[in-house]
Image (cartoon, rainbow, N blue to C red; front, top):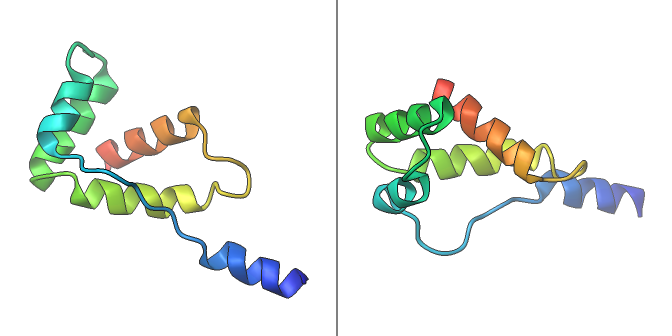
Length: 84
């Protein structure tokens, strides 16, 4: 059982449902004048969309599946992505 659980935990992946675009991110961030929001939007414009963000975010959040994916964890990962 331990081996199966370990295998499943190591091979679990995270995905996002629904459509999200650069325009929808702009709408979510509208009115947010924080440094984090501005940096994230600038990074997404530089990357020409959200595809790289979603792949990177899902990959990084995988590390937190065991301990919990929470709003603070997602926020931290978005900030790290924007700074990369």
